[in-house]
Image 1 (cartoon, rainbow, N blue to C red):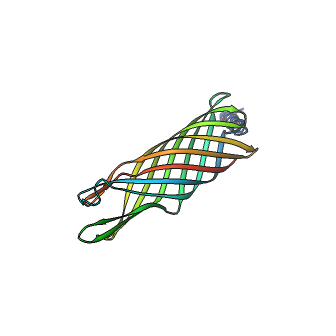
Image 2: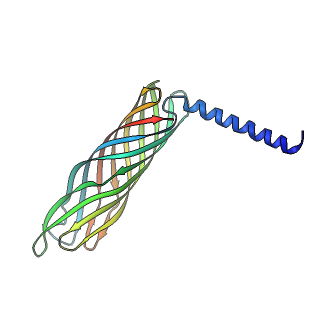
Image 3: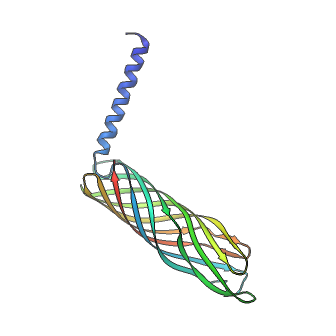
Amino acid sequence: MNLKRLIYGVCASALALVCGSAAAQSSQKFVGPALGISVSVQGNKTPLSSQVGSLNGKSVQASDTAASLVGSWGWALSDHWVVSLGAAWDIGTTDIGKINYTSGASQTLLLKTREHLSLSISPGYRLNPDLLLYGRLSNHQLRGEYVDSASRAGTVDHAGVGVGLGLAVSVAAKWELRVEYEDVKYDAKTVRTTSGKPEQSLLSMGLLYKF
Protein backbone atom coordinates (compact mmCIF):
# COMPACT_ATOMS: atom_id res chain seq x y z
CA MET A 1 0.00 0.00 0.00
CA ASN A 2 1.45 3.34 -1.01
CA LEU A 3 1.41 6.46 1.20
CA LYS A 4 -1.39 8.19 -0.72
CA ARG A 5 -3.77 5.25 -0.28
CA LEU A 6 -2.89 5.06 3.40
CA ILE A 7 -3.68 8.77 3.86
CA TYR A 8 -6.98 8.38 1.97
CA GLY A 9 -7.87 5.39 4.09
CA VAL A 10 -7.18 7.23 7.35
CA CYS A 11 -9.17 10.27 6.20
CA ALA A 12 -12.11 8.11 5.11
CA SER A 13 -12.11 6.25 8.43
CA ALA A 14 -12.01 9.53 10.38
CA LEU A 15 -14.87 10.96 8.30
CA ALA A 16 -16.93 7.82 8.88
CA LEU A 17 -16.37 8.08 12.63
CA VAL A 18 -17.38 11.76 12.67
CA CYS A 19 -20.49 11.13 10.57
CA GLY A 20 -21.42 8.13 12.68
CA SER A 21 -21.04 10.16 15.86
CA ALA A 22 -23.14 13.00 14.41
CA ALA A 23 -25.84 10.57 13.32
CA ALA A 24 -25.93 8.98 16.77
CA GLN A 25 -26.19 12.41 18.38
CA SER A 26 -28.94 13.63 16.05
CA SER A 27 -31.00 10.49 16.69
CA GLN A 28 -31.35 11.55 20.33
CA LYS A 29 -34.20 13.85 21.28
CA PHE A 30 -33.24 17.53 21.73
CA VAL A 31 -29.85 16.84 20.09
CA GLY A 32 -28.66 17.84 16.63
CA PRO A 33 -29.85 20.56 14.22
CA ALA A 34 -33.42 21.91 14.17
CA LEU A 35 -35.23 24.67 12.27
CA GLY A 36 -38.67 26.18 12.74
CA ILE A 37 -40.84 29.19 13.45
CA SER A 38 -41.80 30.89 16.68
CA VAL A 39 -44.58 33.33 17.63
CA SER A 40 -44.04 35.65 20.60
CA VAL A 41 -46.12 38.05 22.63
CA GLN A 42 -43.90 41.03 23.47
CA GLY A 43 -44.23 43.59 26.22
CA ASN A 44 -42.11 46.55 25.13
CA LYS A 45 -41.06 49.50 27.28
CA THR A 46 -38.58 52.30 26.58
CA PRO A 47 -37.76 54.67 29.48
CA LEU A 48 -36.72 58.09 28.21
CA SER A 49 -34.22 60.62 29.48
CA SER A 50 -34.47 63.97 27.75
CA GLN A 51 -33.71 67.66 27.88
CA VAL A 52 -37.33 68.13 26.79
CA GLY A 53 -39.19 68.42 30.08
CA SER A 54 -42.41 66.77 28.87
CA LEU A 55 -40.42 63.67 27.76
CA ASN A 56 -37.89 63.39 30.59
CA GLY A 57 -38.65 60.50 32.94
CA LYS A 58 -41.52 59.21 30.78
CA SER A 59 -41.72 55.79 29.09
CA VAL A 60 -43.01 54.61 25.74
CA GLN A 61 -44.92 51.33 26.13
CA ALA A 62 -46.81 48.87 23.93
CA SER A 63 -47.59 45.19 23.49
CA ASP A 64 -47.32 43.43 20.15
CA THR A 65 -46.80 40.02 18.57
CA ALA A 66 -43.92 38.89 16.35
CA ALA A 67 -43.07 35.87 14.23
CA SER A 68 -39.48 34.62 14.09
CA LEU A 69 -37.42 32.14 12.12
CA VAL A 70 -35.49 30.02 14.64
CA GLY A 71 -32.71 27.47 14.51
CA SER A 72 -30.70 25.52 17.04
CA TRP A 73 -28.12 22.78 17.44
CA GLY A 74 -28.03 20.67 20.58
CA TRP A 75 -25.29 18.50 22.08
CA ALA A 76 -25.74 15.80 24.71
CA LEU A 77 -23.33 16.31 27.61
CA SER A 78 -24.64 13.29 29.52
CA ASP A 79 -27.79 11.17 29.74
CA HIS A 80 -29.65 14.09 31.33
CA TRP A 81 -27.79 17.28 30.34
CA VAL A 82 -28.05 18.98 26.92
CA VAL A 83 -26.63 22.31 25.74
CA SER A 84 -27.92 24.12 22.64
CA LEU A 85 -26.80 27.06 20.55
CA GLY A 86 -29.62 28.98 18.90
CA ALA A 87 -30.49 31.91 16.67
CA ALA A 88 -33.74 33.78 15.96
CA TRP A 89 -34.64 36.46 13.43
CA ASP A 90 -37.90 38.45 13.70
CA ILE A 91 -40.00 38.76 10.55
CA GLY A 92 -41.28 42.29 10.00
CA THR A 93 -41.54 45.18 12.48
CA THR A 94 -42.73 45.37 16.08
CA ASP A 95 -44.65 48.21 17.71
CA ILE A 96 -42.80 49.80 20.65
CA GLY A 97 -45.37 52.48 21.37
CA LYS A 98 -46.32 56.14 21.02
CA ILE A 99 -46.12 59.10 23.38
CA ASN A 100 -47.47 62.63 23.11
CA TYR A 101 -45.44 65.53 24.45
CA THR A 102 -45.11 69.29 24.22
CA SER A 103 -42.24 71.13 22.54
CA GLY A 104 -43.45 74.50 21.29
CA ALA A 105 -46.68 72.72 20.33
CA SER A 106 -48.29 69.30 20.77
CA GLN A 107 -45.92 66.62 19.36
CA THR A 108 -45.86 62.83 18.90
CA LEU A 109 -43.01 60.32 19.18
CA LEU A 110 -43.64 56.90 17.58
CA LEU A 111 -41.25 53.95 18.06
CA LYS A 112 -40.93 50.60 16.26
CA THR A 113 -38.25 47.92 15.90
CA ARG A 114 -37.01 45.84 13.00
CA GLU A 115 -34.05 43.56 12.19
CA HIS A 116 -34.24 41.93 15.62
CA LEU A 117 -31.65 39.13 15.86
CA SER A 118 -30.76 37.01 18.89
CA LEU A 119 -28.02 34.44 19.49
CA SER A 120 -28.33 32.20 22.52
CA ILE A 121 -26.86 29.38 24.59
CA SER A 122 -29.27 27.15 26.49
CA PRO A 123 -28.16 24.52 29.02
CA GLY A 124 -30.96 22.06 29.68
CA TYR A 125 -31.89 19.08 31.86
CA ARG A 126 -34.02 16.17 30.63
CA LEU A 127 -36.89 15.67 33.09
CA ASN A 128 -37.79 12.58 31.06
CA PRO A 129 -36.94 11.37 27.53
CA ASP A 130 -39.58 13.70 25.99
CA LEU A 131 -39.28 16.77 28.24
CA LEU A 132 -36.38 19.23 28.53
CA LEU A 133 -36.21 22.14 30.98
CA TYR A 134 -33.60 24.75 30.00
CA GLY A 135 -32.22 28.15 30.82
CA ARG A 136 -31.42 30.73 28.16
CA LEU A 137 -28.71 33.39 27.98
CA SER A 138 -28.79 35.47 24.81
CA ASN A 139 -27.35 38.43 22.96
CA HIS A 140 -29.86 40.64 21.13
CA GLN A 141 -29.43 43.19 18.36
CA LEU A 142 -32.25 45.34 17.02
CA ARG A 143 -32.78 48.48 14.97
CA GLY A 144 -35.18 51.02 16.43
CA GLU A 145 -37.22 53.24 14.13
CA TYR A 146 -38.52 56.56 15.42
CA VAL A 147 -40.87 59.14 13.93
CA ASP A 148 -40.78 62.46 15.81
CA SER A 149 -43.23 65.13 14.66
CA ALA A 150 -40.96 67.82 16.13
CA SER A 151 -37.99 66.81 13.99
CA ARG A 152 -37.71 63.89 11.57
CA ALA A 153 -37.69 60.09 11.26
CA GLY A 154 -34.59 57.93 11.71
CA THR A 155 -33.11 54.72 13.08
CA VAL A 156 -30.80 53.74 15.92
CA ASP A 157 -29.21 50.36 16.77
CA HIS A 158 -29.40 48.76 20.22
CA ALA A 159 -27.57 45.76 21.74
CA GLY A 160 -28.97 43.84 24.69
CA VAL A 161 -28.72 40.81 26.96
CA GLY A 162 -31.58 38.43 27.67
CA VAL A 163 -32.13 35.87 30.43
CA GLY A 164 -34.94 33.33 30.29
CA LEU A 165 -36.37 29.90 30.94
CA GLY A 166 -37.89 27.39 28.54
CA LEU A 167 -39.54 24.00 28.22
CA ALA A 168 -39.13 21.75 25.16
CA VAL A 169 -41.44 18.82 24.43
CA SER A 170 -40.75 16.10 21.88
CA VAL A 171 -44.18 15.75 20.25
CA ALA A 172 -43.08 13.35 17.47
CA ALA A 173 -39.92 11.70 16.19
CA LYS A 174 -38.86 14.81 14.26
CA TRP A 175 -40.81 17.62 15.95
CA GLU A 176 -40.21 19.74 19.05
CA LEU A 177 -42.58 22.19 20.71
CA ARG A 178 -40.90 24.94 22.77
CA VAL A 179 -42.32 27.49 25.20
CA GLU A 180 -40.00 30.26 26.49
CA TYR A 181 -40.11 33.35 28.67
CA GLU A 182 -37.29 35.91 28.46
CA ASP A 183 -36.46 39.37 29.80
CA VAL A 184 -34.18 41.53 27.63
CA LYS A 185 -32.41 44.76 28.62
CA TYR A 186 -30.84 46.94 25.92
CA ASP A 187 -28.22 49.67 26.05
CA ALA A 188 -29.21 53.34 25.94
CA LYS A 189 -28.81 55.38 22.77
CA THR A 190 -29.22 59.13 22.38
CA VAL A 191 -30.77 60.95 19.42
CA ARG A 192 -30.29 64.72 19.67
CA THR A 193 -31.54 65.56 23.20
CA THR A 194 -33.41 62.35 24.07
CA SER A 195 -32.04 58.98 25.22
CA GLY A 196 -33.99 55.69 25.14
CA LYS A 197 -33.16 52.37 26.81
CA PRO A 198 -35.51 49.62 25.54
CA GLU A 199 -36.72 46.66 27.60
CA GLN A 200 -38.61 43.60 26.37
CA SER A 201 -40.55 40.77 28.01
CA LEU A 202 -41.00 37.91 25.53
CA LEU A 203 -43.35 34.93 25.86
CA SER A 204 -42.95 32.68 22.83
CA MET A 205 -44.07 29.33 21.45
CA GLY A 206 -42.15 27.62 18.68
CA LEU A 207 -42.43 24.50 16.55
CA LEU A 208 -39.16 23.09 15.19
CA TYR A 209 -38.31 20.26 12.83
CA LYS A 210 -35.26 18.21 13.79
CA PHE A 211 -32.96 17.00 11.02
